[in-house]
Structure formats: C-alpha cells, structure tokens
Amino acid sequence: MSFAPEPPYRHGGAERTAVLLVNLGTPDAPTPAALRRYLAQFLWDPRVVEIPRPLWWLILNGVILRTRPAKSAAKYASIWTEQGSPLLVWTRRQAECLQAELSARGHPVLVRGAMRYGKPSIAAALDALQAEGATRVLVLPLYPQYAAATTASTIDAVAAWAMRSRRPPELRFVNRYHDDPGYIAALAASVHEHWARQPRGEKLVMSFHGVPARSLALGDPYHCECHKTARLLAEALGLAREDYVVTFQSRLGRARWLEPYTEPTVKALAEQGVKRIDAICPGFAADNLETLEEIAMEAREAFLGAGGEQFQFIACLNDRPDWIAAMADLSLRHLQGWPGFGAPVVAPAERAAQRERALAMGAVD
Image 1 (spheres, rainbow, N blue to C red):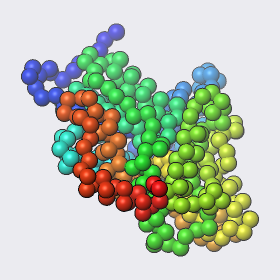
Image 2 (image 1 turned 180 degrees about the horizontal axis):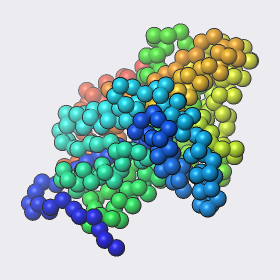
Image 3 (image 1 turned 45 degrees about the horizontal axis):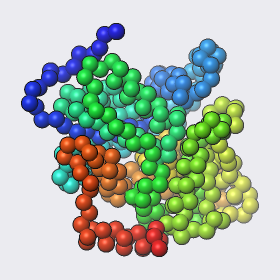
Image 4 (image 1 turned 135 degrees about the vertical axis):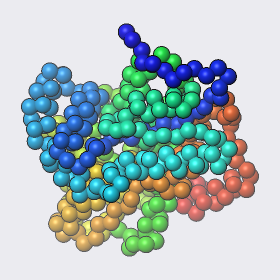
C-alpha cells in the first residue's frame, strides 16, 4: 500500500490547530450532469442506503441515475444563487465567522469547510489544512443530531483519508450537539425574532430530515435526539405540547421512514382548520435545498392548497452571531487538553448576561 506524499516536515515549526466544519454536500451546478455525479457519490455510500451492493447498483444505475438528475437539477435551479449553492455559501461563511470568533477570543485556530459529497471534499480540505501546518484537527459535522447516515459517514471519510496519509494529524470528532444550550438558545432567539416581525402561527412545525424507520430499531439515536431538540426548543419558547408538531421530510424510496411525514402533516393541519403555521428545520445548521425548496416552497404550496392561509418559514441559523458564538463554545469545549486550550473562562459579567438572556427566553427557571 502506498501513502500520499506529505508537506515537507518543518523541524521546530509552529504546530497549528484546526476546526473542520463538514456539511452534507452539494452539486457543482444545477444541471443534470452535475446532479448525476453528485447523486452517484451520495447514494452509493453504504451509510446512506443499506441495501446489498449488487442489488442497489442495479437500482441506482438502472433507474435512479437515469431519471432523478433532471428533476433534482430543476429543484436546485430554483434556489441557486449568484454565489452558487446556498449550502456551500453558508458553510463557507460559517467557517469564516467561526475563525474570526475564535481569533477574537485569543485562539488563532484555522477553520475550513468541507462537503461529505461534492466539493470541497473532506480529503481536499484535510490536505489543505496539513499544507497550512495543522497538526491537530477537530472535525465538527454540521448535523446537530447524530445519525449513522450523516455523522458516521463523515467519520468514515476522515478515516479513509487518514488511512492514506503518511503523517495524519491528531483527530477529534464532535458527534452531536442536539441538546447544546447555545444551539437551543440560538434556535429560540431566531423564532422569537421571526414572531416579532410576522404574525405568529397557530402551530410551529419542526421538520427534521428523515431516515429509514428501521434505523431506530438498529440502534440509531437520531429519532430520540430530534425529539429532545424539539422538546428543549419548545420549552425555551414556552410552548405547550399542542402548540407544535415534530415531522420528518425528504423520504427516499418506498420503505417506511420516520413519521409523521412533513408534507402530509401540513396538509392535514390545513384540512383540520389550522389557518396559520410557522415551520422551522432545527436539524439543518444552514439553509439548503431541503429547507429552501422542500419546505419554504413545496410544503408551503401543499398547506395553502389544502386551505391554509399563511405559511411562514423560519430560516436556518446560518451566520447568526449567537449561533457562531455557540459553535465557538462547542469547539472550545472539544479542544480542551490540546496545547493552548484549557477550560474556557467566562467572566462573571458575561455569565450573568448569559443567564439573563436565558431567563428572558424561558430557557432556565
């Protein structure tokens, strides 16, 4: 087995620490050809589709990659920006903001973004970090709730790169942050700000990305962690159980996935006489096809078509300052013990201010 060449070793050179933000992925362009390349990589991952490889190869190459790229390209075209894919734009922005936040706190950490599928790849990002002198890397997948299809797949990709590396850096992973106080507080603040601008809906729909239902029986904690996030967010907002509903979107294939499904649920709400709903996607750290097209467009159309009157989508956290600060807190907790990183120190005044903000949102008693 041969190993990839490494950047020249610098005796006595300063060792650097890095944070790698990883999101799911995006095609290079909203075209059928680009979508075919992207879907071929994404859907061939055995973490994503747990079907015997020979059978799945026939289905993927004989059916899906012949029909789905053109349909998906049209969907991507509806949300594409001048800067490119929203997911890539926001992930880059988050990396820039997190690096600036950590630097302002006295930690000159390198922060870069990568995509599990598509570009920039995890391998390319890790190569670049090594070239910049990174000898310690914290991998932070931008999936608040752990799922084998997302978080574990990221670990797989990092491990595959490390297996080919002659001198891999020290590695750490953040597996989940579904109940992180800063994350919950940022979500709650985003909802409060939305309600301050728009009339509040009768129901808050919390839509998470779906996974096959069998994953729950196989030991994947994703379903439970989604519900815990929803409960904590509801508590921070002061919502009663009847004020919100948890749903799952983006079903693939005919197998049963986690329920209830988002689009049938919003239709049912309209048919039951609910006129105004708000929708938020707490499982996505940045807006993307699943939020901007599937929820803000398709679910909205389904709700209004079934008799609803107002459907308001609450944007993902994206580059909100409170979310960037929460990511910095999360990163620093996981960086503890590496050179230059002790226990984070919070000044008494800031600690009091944090408690006041939490009390104002009902996050603590």
